[in-house]
Image (tube, rainbow, N blue to C red; front, side, top):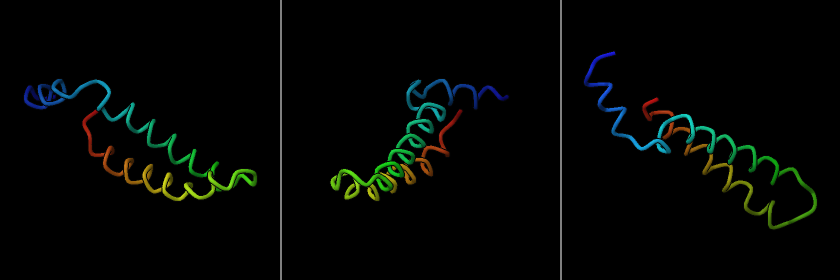
Length: 67
């Protein structure tokens, strides 16, 4: 690994690294699916698509972050 690439990765805060943010995005996608397929609370169903969309867009953006 080159020294320039190593410095670039060190500057990113730990919470903005790819691993934790991808985990959060996957959790949002899973939450959106659970909200969509539950038959009990209409409010959850109402916001399920937005939750899925936010999780998907977040995953696409976060996948470009450094390791």
